[in-house]
Image (cartoon, rainbow, N blue to C red; front, side):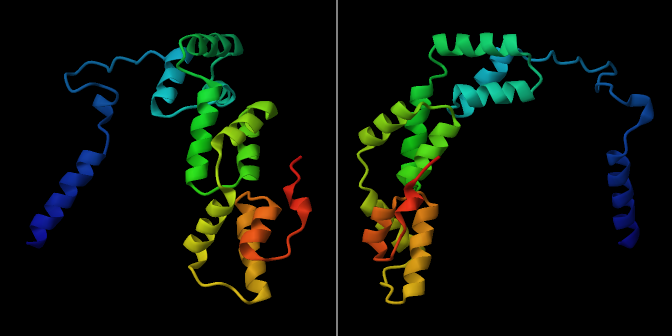
Length: 189
């Protein structure tokens, strides 16, 4: 039995070791055909097939992939003209997703801005979202801390900090937690 186990481990080890005579060769004995590098357009289209991306995000990913600026710009222009990439659609999808995940308007504003969405469009999107931020904040508190109310000042402060980190404005946090929250936390640079 021990000899069988040893023989099997030797066979497995031999399969893992590359054979120097056949390195880089196909099973049929020939060399593997080298795959041509995909164009920036094809790369970006592949990324968009997985999920929505902002133009800014695609530009960064293509640059990191080694594509030059002219090819990247041409690819992004072509994708935009074909409506495969649309920053408005990206922003709407991201906004809906983050609201469903329980994030507040301040966090959403910062994230959308980091993707290159203009401030005026962010304001429109947040108004169109018509989210009940108080209810969303209360749901996040219940999910995190349960239904029990907190009488302890330190616990209320902890809960308030949790909601502030999730991007809720001070007025919402104050109304939901009954904690003293500074209005300066609402300022976004």
